[in-house]
Image 1 (cartoon, helix red, strand yellow):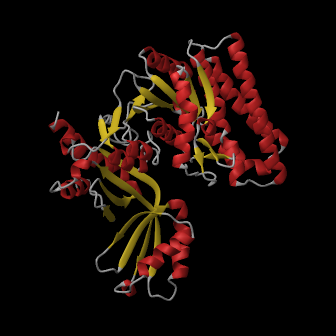
Image 2 (cartoon, rainbow, N blue to C red):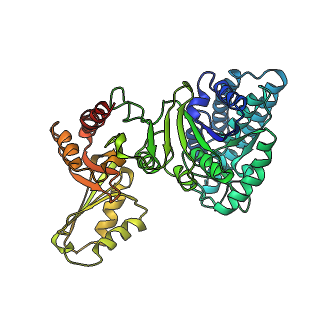
Image 3 (cartoon, rainbow, N blue to C red):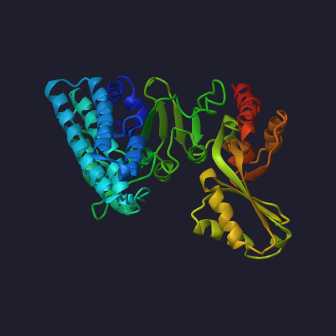
Length: 470
């Protein structure tokens, strides 16, 4: 018997017969004798809709609020129509959705009347997505003769600080609370269905774990109850060697280390939340990424560090919507504290630096930041370094391309292969960064060259290595 935490993504839940698929998967696991905790996201794009509603409600009339509520009602009614629920069970779920929509309406009306949206209020609004999907999924599981109850993340035991929007779990308290709540349910054969993304502060306030936080909820709970594995169910076959919108027919990566998967998560691999692997890695719990539409496929297994025999570069990723921020001038040379002033000024203006490169001459510091923060970063540095004899420039027309794989560690000629492949396409590399872990080589190119660079790497390195080792 295994103890599994299964997280189901919103795109799968919102698909035709998606909730039935969830019921099928859970039912088969229970037939095998597995203990199962289910974590669910909001349906489809409901979180985006709720975020937009929270932001717009300050200027909305009652009619506009009613229109938003009606759209959410249609989304959830459509999902319920494609479940196996009948008669009283369906009526019960419908009444629950209506009650949630009523509370949401009151919250939006309050925001509209006050013309004010606090981080706390935003968390309350966006929490309704998972709070409505979890009871629907739980009812589908009960319809198959399996005892099940739905819980918010807070009710399941996830306790956080009060950093609304990006709450930080309190580890010891969460572990104790989650074990006390979930283990008795599992021992009775019950399947808890937990609303992911949502948590609770020690003062009882509703908090959220940030976008994509349902993955994080799953690994937090898995660590707390000492699960054997976490299964992330999504709408793709696993973690891919490249974005299918960029590279034609990328392959599924069969196995990754935690470190490799964390790198890819940061670079936008849609399968995992960047923070989610932390609890699993610390507790050494394997994570599987699986396709809910094709559950028979093995997917991608994420576990401890793997050997280089599985490939030098396992995947290629592209990060768009970034900008290149450059500080240059001879006065940077040999002046202790100049770099500290640069990064302190950016931090004070809430500009997060994603990538850094500095020449040994110290005459140039190049940084990659989010494109939305580029103007703010340029202004902050020009103020800070005024009359210092340096130039501060920002270029929004760039993208980052990254090659990820533990096989690069100690491998001679990796950089030559990577940049040789890129140069073969006539693409100029503007900035390079590689950490001491050697898991990731990242470089900056003009935005219009990013896809060509990714395809070149995939063809000449990822595909070549995979073919030569199969």
